[in-house]
Every structure is written in C-alpha cells, then in structure tokens.
Length: 542
Image (cartoon, rainbow, N blue to C red; front, side, top):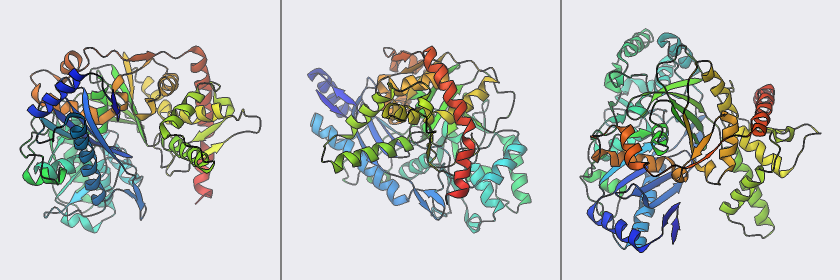
C-alpha cells in the first residue's frame, strides 16, 4: 500500500489503471492556492486521486498590507507541480507528458491590478486585509447588497476614494486564480463563483450585475475615476465551459523541464468557496458545506434571494451560477496551529521525536475528553480582523477565570470551539431568513482527525455534519473535478456530481448530542460576552 498526501493505492490493478490513465491523458489536474499551502492533485478517469504534491507558504504583512509576492506564487506553483509529477514517475514509472484537462483555484477576493504592459501596479492585496471600510459602507448602501471589505470591488473603490496614483495606469484587475489562469492561457476570464467575490452577479444572466455596474461607475465618476468597469473586469464563465488552452509559455511556467506539452484545455479558474462546494457535493439547493482552514466559511445554496441585506453575510454563487449565502470568517485554525507548533518545540527541547501528524491527532483526540462548554476557558484566535464580530485587527487571546477548569482537554476543545465561534454568530443571522438546510458537509484540514472537528462543528452549527473520504484533499480535488467536468458538461453540474463523482460516497455523519449542543451554546454566549476584551486588546497591545 502506498500512502502519500492522503492518496491510497491498494492493488496492482489500481496501479495499472492509473498508469494507463496517465499514458492516455485520461486525467485531470487541479491546483489550488490556499492561504498556507499550494496543492496539486492529479485524478484518474474514476475521479480518484492518483498523485499529488504541495508547497507550504505564508502571507506576509508588508507596509501594513497582507500580501504574497509574485515570485512566491510562481515558485509555489512549480514546486507543487514538480512534486506531483515526481510522484507520478515514482509510483507509475511514467513522465507526465500530457494531462486531459487542468484547473486552477485560489483564495477568493483580493486585488491584483495590472497596466497595459501587464505589470503589477501595487502588491497583491489579499482577502485578509481590512483597509476598505469606507468603500464597504458606501457600496453596500448604494447597491443595497452586501459588499465586504475583502471583495475586489471594495479594494478598487477604496483606491479611488484614496486617489491612489496607480489608477491612472489601471487596465485590468482580477483574483489570484484569474491571474494564474491568464498567465498560463492568455485568457482574462474567471469562473462565476470566483467572480461573485469580485462584484455582484446577476444569477439570471450569469454575468456581473449591470445595474450595479452603472451605480458603481456613477460613484467612481463623482470621485474622479472615469474608466468603464466592464473593461477592467475579467470575462465571467460558468462551469463546464472551455476557458482556453495551455500555451507554450504557460507550459514552461508550470513545468520548466519542458516535459509537459502545450495545448491542454483548462476549465474556468475558480475560488476556494466554489471548489469546496464541488468537493463536498454541495451545489444543489438546500445543501451546504463548511470549509475550515486558516479561514473558514459556511456555504448554503439558496432557493431564493434573501429578503434583507446583512453585512455579515456574503452572497456569492456556485460554479454553475446558483445563489449562495456565505458566512465567512477570516480566522479559524491559525491559532490552533500556533499552539501545536509550541507543543512541538517543547517536545523537541526534550529530545522527543514526535511527528506533527501524531501530535495533531493526539491533541485533537484529547479535546473530546474536555467539557462541552470548555470548562470556562475562552480564546479568540484572531490573527487578523473579523468582520462578523466587528473586530478590525488580530490579537490572538487566551483568557480564563481562576476557577476555570484549566487542563489540556479543555484547552484543546476551547481552541476548536473558538475556531467556529464567529461562524456560529453568522449562522444565527441566517436563521432570521428562514433558510432551510437538508445536508451539511465539512471539509478541510481540521477534519483530517476523525470525529473531533466534525463533532464540535455539528454542535456549533446545530445540525448533523457529514465528512467524506476526500475531506483532506479539499479544494485541489474540487478544482480537479471541475477540470474533469469539461468532458462531461452535457450534464448539469449537480447531476454530474451526484451520478458520477459521488455515486458511491456516503461519507460519515455525526449528529450533535444534547450535551454538546448545550455546552456549545454556553460557550458561544461566553464568547460574545467576552468580545470587548478582544477589542480592548487592540487598543492596549500595539
């Protein structure tokens, strides 16, 4: 048995089948740029992963802006691809010469702005920045549609309000996935799910909402900006549409060895929200998924538009263009990772060799021994601002009363519970819109240890949560599925996923116990009550 990056090849027959898929080009490759890891997943004709590679990276706070450099973007892309291709050769004895189809996805939102010569005008402004408060307020009021600070249009409008010099040269702006796709194909396009995090979408026309484009251009003109918004935005495409082909230059960018051939078709580049929906079979109405990593979001596919504008709730779309309510939190697992690294440093200091996988598994399982209300302990894992709770900056904070039950089990349960605290507050808002959910699926690294994260999320969401075997593969597998969908687009996306990809994948479902529900309710009330402590930490800890 071979076990790498979550990929399990168990029989000689599976190895032989995978090898034939590679030789025949009956494969699909998905590469997703997450906030801490770039991951490449190659799947075969049965949609099962057959090889993968990854690259760890971190955003940097440069001159007050959360960013990634272009050099790091391309280095990470090449290394994740190289590791995946090396695994193909090691496991199957074949060089990766061609691929059936390719897809790229990345963190949604943010701002990558270019001039006519394709030069980057300002450093990449990621979703993590909280610098567009004035734009958020004015656009939400003008559109009567929630425009969060991280949306691309909020970044553009704030730059206009600030009269930034780069706007005179602005010719095009896009997201990270859109940028990578453009460089590899020459096509300035974007999948509709990712596009819906740039600017509001008209779900009927499957395009940017032109009534809001007109409103924006009027506002921008009043601030001295006269360029036409449609000329600056990428073209919107739905899932299953041919989004261009890998150019000779693009093939070299991806594989500098020259082994990979040009001409491979690409699917529309998507955002991590859309790939999460695909990876969890959650594109149908009244289904939802929770993606949990450095950030976290719950996506609920709506039956109809919401009646009210809620600044805590994003409205985006599935990769097919159906309306989705998104409860997005900027913070989830970062503080957990920080504490695990501290425990690892302690073990290393004692000369004890414990792998990170074993350490995570041990600490997560310990959380199940904790009290449902976390023994009175409280934390805010805010490494950056949090819109839902009205916190503008990050101050990771752990606080307790002297009588709190301070032990390792409660300490770990507290951090896991806190990771979903802001999301629970957002879900309370959705309840006021009477939105119904038939199925909720969890995915992301926090669910790799069986039961633990899933059980706490079920209590936080007050609903059964299903985790599939592909939970650890996450969005890279999801965008690989969207790439494979290019050859199956005669079916609608919902039917394709249900009948072909997930026909035999039931997953494991956990229903929250009464004790867990009551305990988490107590915890989240304490969480809300303690929020002023977090806000004061910003004032007094500079």
